[in-house]
Image 1 (cartoon, rainbow, N blue to C red):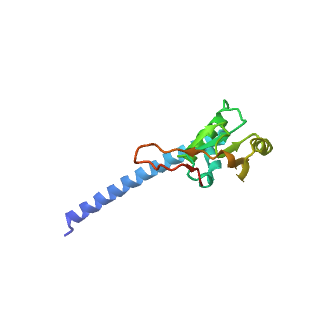
Image 2: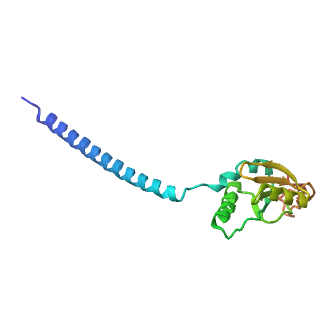
Image 3: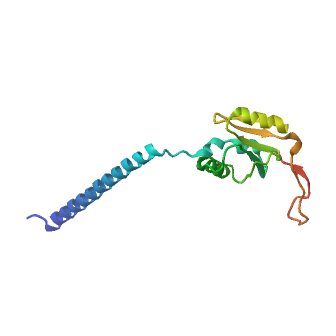
Length: 164
């Protein structure tokens, strides 16, 4: 005599696996549809995270709380403004001071490396590192910012230069 509970469990398992397979197939269908849609969108407007161009500079800048960011590019252009914002994101907690070359470290993001090197020479800085995107980190040896400590006991009362 066949066991009724056994056949009922088999039917429930078969229904469960069938429904699970159907949901999986539907999800794969919609995922494929969305992926194809995104591929077409990215072919028209590719996504590039411009902040990656600034990776590694934070190790050279060290503990400096502020660095200059000099550019001769038009920041009304969306791409140039986006690159500045993404550079700030990558270099956090370092604050980028736009078009101020009076800091110990200055990042030059110019229309050409020659324009950046000319500006570096004009301010008397020394280039430290350049990358393949034409971004140059320069050091102003005369412009090391000294920070006086607050009189509150929690702060160090020494005056020290920014150091990497």
